Length: 167
Image 1 (cartoon, rainbow, N blue to C red):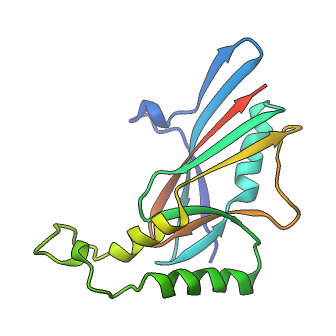
Image 2: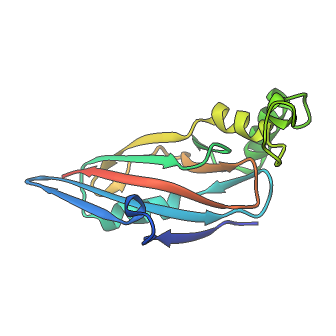
Image 3: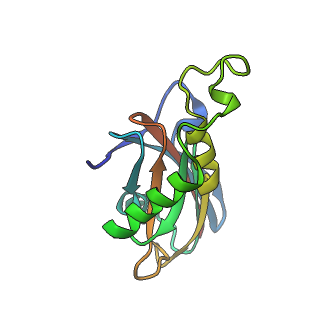
């Protein structure tokens, strides 16, 4: 099942609204992009959505910084191929078991009712940020590279902060 991208300019949070900063020759644009996941563990190809944001930014050369705003998600660059995606899920699941004896899941140590310690550990294993180059108003990616949002505690609504800076 695919994710549903939702652009967000949340009025409740000034940090979430799209912003642009003016410095002669150098610009920064920031926005929050939301996705809705459908499964507890899900990998989503977000390449086209992020590429569209970069294209529309008007920045030809610079950097794009992506940051997931959740501790139970991760970001990665990888090949978007079904067998490899299954391997990603299998690898992460073999390194971090879902039902291990985690203190985060134990009411004697934690007030978290979601019993999602494995999701936090998997998100940390993946990492929560990516930094990529922008060249000629496009993401600089290799032939087989895709941007992957990894959900480890879904289904939920997820947000990624996108900041593009350059000229």
